Image 1 (cartoon, rainbow, N blue to C red):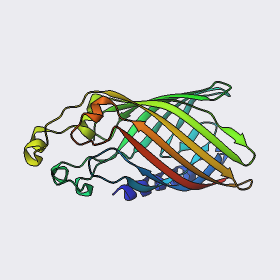
Image 2: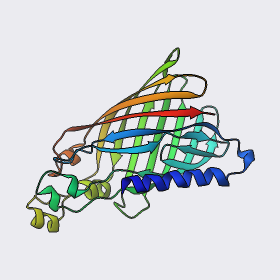
Image 3: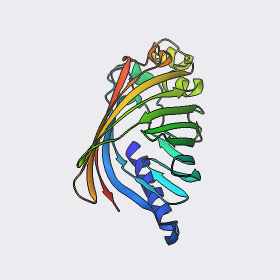
Length: 250
């Protein structure tokens, strides 16, 4: 299911490129990566899936990862963007090795509408975004605030990033709450989650093989908020992610 949705996203991005006027003068890079994410669910393996390594923009539009949108403001240092993104967080009860977890409802991935502001401080990039679920899954909200800086060493680059993700009560309750009906069916205690903040660190490395092709790898660690850690669906205090990919700059 996840692969099908990601394929639809890739088709949508390709269609947007095809529909864009030639005068739009898109520039950037396109490629493909493979990422693994652990959301902390009990006895459930990390999810591995392909993800487009896209970072392309024109004067008015952009495509970045699983998000596409438009610039409301675009200067050398300030950018204000509105976009729509695919949010891949999900839970498939059948994937868990825990008999009780298998009796819970699935949690589906969703689409978010996002407003983002970025500021080039001169030393690094400061970004703040606020998104709302527009697919009717969690009906929740999410905010991501981070700072990142790339350090170049010849053909190699290292980019550390530090940030925090705020997730609303509805978001946390959909992905980590346990309803009374689920509790009766699974014998897991009912749980209602509040909003919470999860800080994280991320480290990305890239190798510019030539003028066009590059390889990248990344890893991240996210400390789960108390509201998520307290869920009976969760077994960890922190979760990790990994990713590798290749991209072509044009």
